[in-house]
Amino acid sequence: MNTPVIGLTMGDPAGIGPEITVAALADPAVRAMVRPLLVADARVVERSINAAGLNIGVNRVSGPEEIGSDPAVVDVLDLDNVGEVEFGRVSGEYGAAAVESIETTCALAREGRIDGLVTAPINKEAIRAGGSGFPGHTEMLAHLFGVPANQVVTMFVLDKLRIFFLTRHHPLADAIAGLNTEQVRAGLVRVHELLGELGFERRHIALAALNPHAGENGLIGREELDILGPAADAARADGVDVAGPVPADAVFHQARQGRYDGVLSLYHDQGHIAAKTVDFFGTVSCTLGLPVIRASVDHGTAFDIAGRGIADAGGQVAAIRVAAELAGQVLAVRGRVPVTHP
Image (cartoon, rainbow, N blue to C red; front, side, top):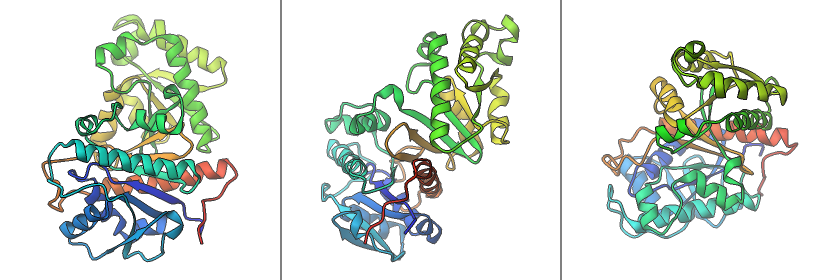
């Protein structure tokens, strides 16, 4: 009963989210890590099981309190919110159904009935057509949990590599133009705080440089001298153990070897490319700063192969594993144990 209860969202029903989720939940190793509750339309789940040729059943439940222990059964909180699904099609109906799955799972977390969540891929065009005003998961989750957006941070996990992002979905020119010393200092302090919430004592953080060779002391750009270096110094004055700025062509490899507990990436692709080149499906995206851990695969809906039962579920397996591990670490730091149900 010390296994964490993890809520899993459906994702876009026309994409691969449902099928990679059921394939992951059919893995005995995954079922040993968590007590899963899939929040979805049960008919979509059944179709995904059939498409993948899996020998598992569906048990409709009204909440996490009814989760069973049979590894051959997927417990589904049935939203009954999707008609017939045309795989690979962008639809407002499907987008609204995906959002309802997220909202319902977050409500369970707010009520203390689950320990963490794993989200399946959504389509941004579809959720917009379905009435959502959020650009993606992160902003939506911050709103649903009532957390200021600037307190929510994305972290990539791949083996010992943990990458935090100073900025997310901004044009590269805007991300660079917006760099300032206070923004970077605050980012380093926030990473220090979040690693503490995950139970890390050392919390040795590397700041990724912007320019080649970290600017070569001003020969290849001045951002390291004018912005990044002063920000690192200011963070050290705040008690943060910071290295850098460290050249970006080396820092992610060094962190994966265990030299650093976390790396602060300055912009979206700087960290994404580093992790995904090593292991595209094994890279797990986590959202920190919420009341519970949220983990997700870092790939999209793959509409081109949806419904064919051929999607690689390795990323979803990794996301569930990371969610279970981090949820356990957070609960331990907070002096709590996973929720238990009769």
